Amino acid sequence: MTIPGYFEYGCRTRIVAGLGSLEKIPRLFSEAGAGRPLLVTDRGVAKAGLADTVLGAMGGECRPAAVEDDVPPDSELEAVRRIAAVYRDRRCDGILAVGGGSVLDTAKGVNVLVSEHADDLRRFAGAEALSRPLSPLIAVPTTAGTGSEVTLVAVVADRRAATKMLLTSPFLQPMAAVIDPRMTVTLPPTVTAATGMDALAHAVEAYTCLGKNPVSDACARAAVALIGAHLLPAIREPENEQGRLSLAVAATLAGMAFSNAMVGMVHSLGHAVGAICHVPHGNCMAILLPYGLEFNQDAVDAHTAELLLPLAGEEAFVRTPAHHRGGKTISFIRMLNQTLHEWTDGGHPRHFSEVYDGEGAPRVPREELPSIARKAIDDASVFYNPKAMDYNDALRVLEAAWEGRPLDAG
Image (tube, rainbow, N blue to C red; front, side, top):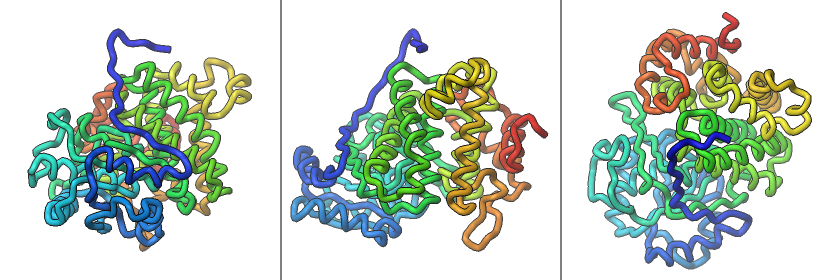
């Protein structure tokens, strides 16, 4: 275990987890003095009946003053402004966010605007722009991936600037995270795969990047172990509530880890791909994670090797020679992507040339890779990467990830 000379760890979010946790939401709002929350969700979640499940569990207590279900697939500035206006018009006093990462990040952005009596979220971009607690926000994640229910980060797209804006502050962390397996049992296999790999990327980068500390390491290793044990079974047995709860807890643990330890180049590259090509974040993380570990291997091989035990299990760890364990971890992640690709009938992409839009057109044209590389080296996450990454490095990684070959094979 590496213990730095100085570190800080914090998680302001109260975690309420388990079957039946949705029923605790009215009490949580009541304890915070709120009784007119705004329910923020998206149309997919609403259509799947998950918002109704939450409202049914709440009974007649603390009914939302308004419901806003028009959150876009990627959180963006205009949606934040529009939903903040609904909050003010309906005189709401809290936010209930039910959804995946886009919904939770949108809700965080709305909370900033309504709590700070502001109209332009760009004023709060970067780190530590907030100086006081915000209004009560309860996060109910419907995917087991982003960890946004406990993170001090929000990522919101600025469409005009073609970039993803990062906000960081402990005050962004929701008042409570309600983790209930009823929210994820209906996830399609492709979404289960992508969000599970998103959580794995959070945990692995938290464990291998510069901001790591003993507490974040403990959360990261626990998350890796739960994902290693339950991600593939969840594809085969999607309605297994214990498995779903395990993955949801893993995502929360990974969020707690990276919210303190930060992430690195995998996220820098993934944010850029998402901003330019609009590839879902979980797909970006799944594709890029083994490449980030390969690029950083000479700097963090010992840490990567340690992750083989929670990821692949004791037998694989013991039979692998110590000096091969880092490489074996990377191979195992590639094998996991391959298995997910097969078990989702090709829906889970292994490299960027396999990512298509709804009409079958490539989402990541190869000619866009230089633009993506230029944007990636300006992303804040790169500062926590264990090795420096310049434009040429970023382009080399992207080209390998586009072709689907190991980093040094071409």
